[in-house]
Image (cartoon, rainbow, N blue to C red):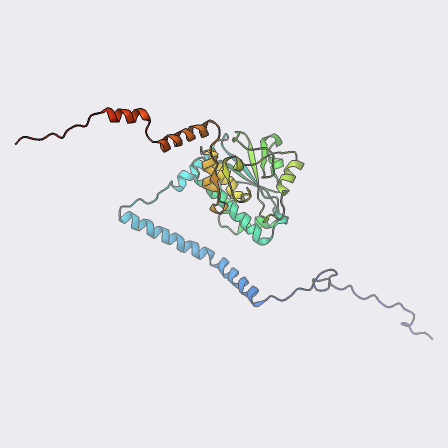
Length: 319
């Protein structure tokens, strides 16, 4: 007589729980080294003490203002915060309009994302302190992305006078005819800033790993592209590729009234070895004539006149 369990099929084993250690195609995680653990502890301490450092800095600034007031010195050298805020609020629609394309969240490492957000902070500061601030848009920020998470690490970022656009790109916010994407690969040269145009700058920190990606995306979307007139105004030892905030700073200075050559030389880093190009055409001829006159000395007519004048004898006073 068969027992009850002899003919029964064996029960299936419970499914194993997949982890990073037993999942196919993954490499088991390695324990952190002493240096990595040390860096993590330092980062945690830095984050915890950030607010305390800011409070101490505010107290030092207050103490400096009190000492300056007692000595009768000016409390500030530049415009006040209220004045800077008023300039941003009253910025005309006909002024500079720039959109920073931040839709590159998945193409940057954590360190590059932090650099990208830091450049956005510098862009905001440049625009805030400009005598002619423009309209500034941060587009393509993913709500659950790393860039948004990095923005949260900056206290007060929500109060910046910037138009934040989450999960919406510049293509959804502006008409395509009004957009010009600035890329160094473009064949068109940006000679003059046009009112009513929004200039798009790619917020991508990639160390040249994604070369030409911004230009490719712009052309695929059917947008107009342009490059800054760097080679038309200066000679550089390196490639004409600028960081995001350098491009914005250059546009801001030109919009404030500077010429391209002066703005470029004041903006780009010294390591690029930029020098203003020699003038050409009519200006070059005028400069050459001035140089020749300086080398030849005074003209022959002036020399003849000086020779014809008689020498005057010294006057003697009678006692």
